[in-house]
Length: 427
Image (cartoon, rainbow, N blue to C red; front, side, top):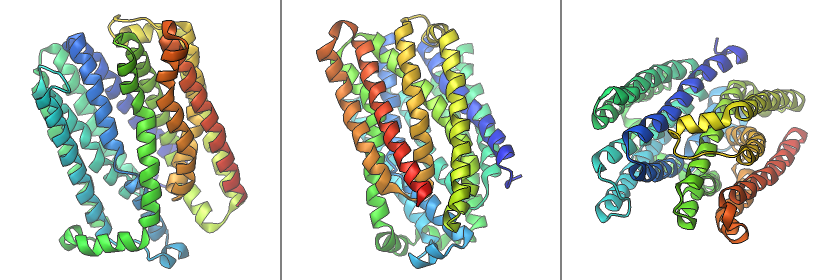
């Protein structure tokens, strides 16, 4: 089953479906159990959580690329020092420190009133549960590199089913703090089991997890260039995707533009997860073709991945055209409305995002972080400038002006990524 790209894609898509249900359920539930002021603060918390999750600086992508070459026994892996088991411990330490640091920042923000809420414990628990996606990402990528995709997808499906049930139980009267705490416990158990399987499959010992000096030295000696490019690319992407939450909040106190962007963000995450599932199902073959130098096969596989991704974009666009306004009203409990012009701009942005996502997932798996960094900087500039320019150029329709500028930015960056892919298959 692991060798079947179609079957693997179906399993990954099933899991993506659960992830999407969970993501929409978070908004559906919390917009109903929280006052609107608390919900706006909650959206900022979610944005900060997204920043934190993305701030692993792409190190798990580097580990996937290196460990995949090690697993395939490629010559390139031997030439650059190869993969060392001690690197897993160094990466796990870094992720743990990242969670601790971000949690400390959140606690300071809550104590200082910078993030205003009357429910600090709920916010803290939700943030911690979100941060568990960092070790989850480590487990997922490590298992994928050693052909353990099905195990992870099965575990993650089970985790999502339970957490969705606990989330919806809030609407039936379950205390939100208890619900989130139980979700936290379930996630810890599942991720711990997955990390344990990585430990066994790689033949690791306890010493490998705590040999920070050896692992850190190997990372500095062989991966520093990739880490620098990957970290800069990841930081750029984090800001580009999430900064509008903050720039919109600075530009206007009206909740509607924030809700519209959050709607786009959820649509974009839904699409990118579907695209990622499709690409990840093809990555075992794509990476084999790339490391074997089979350009014709690589071109064929990339073409299939792009076509499959565009089919998802077309399907989501049709859904938005037919029921986007109703979906928006249901999602945000009728607290704002969305225009047809907003929906059309969201569709344009999603089409561009599709091309961009395929390029990012493929090139990250191949370790082409320098190329990705060069493509991310125009996106960063456009994202940061969209809200201020919208306020300056068309303050009466700030939401529409912002979406237009943001969509055009994504379209331009997508063209740059297509050029990168063309060079890749001609190499």
